[in-house]
Length: 203
Image (tube, rainbow, N blue to C red; front, side):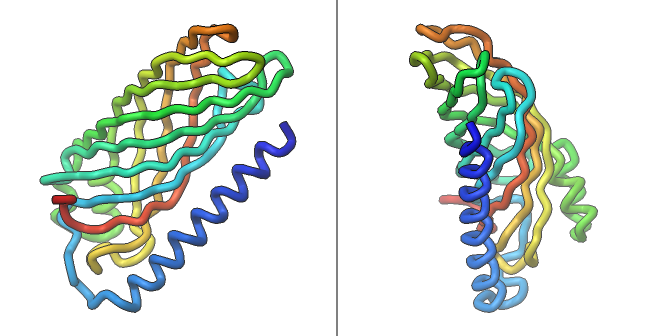
């Protein structure tokens, strides 16, 4: 149990270093206004943070790919999630594959540009569904619907064509696992992370 927060710290530190390195390279390599950000993007991200409920002393991290097209109105994200914590004093882990749909009700604010406009346009509600595998004294599996809300902010210049963004998200997940360790592991998760975003659609 003592190694779990340390492992998360190492993973997040490696991800932050990776994304900031690519961000620095892109700033020096991309001409200004190479591809203005108009709401369409493809993004790789790494997030992590604490959880409440479900696993005692819990924490979670996820890595995923997100795509928005043709406008900022909606986006989709596919991610792998890992969570660690305890149940009745025993160490447990949760592995999951999650798909989410994000809806941006204030996406038209992007027409104004600027940091405040980026914040307002990025505000989104999230609906998700996935499958999770619990590992502890036994192995158990189940489905995991979720709802959430979050925002994104550019750390490097958003209109250079690519760069580093900050992600922040709250997610409520419901999980009923079936197996030797069956039970309910509902949780509230708070994610903060970095993303490497490329402006424009995937195809």
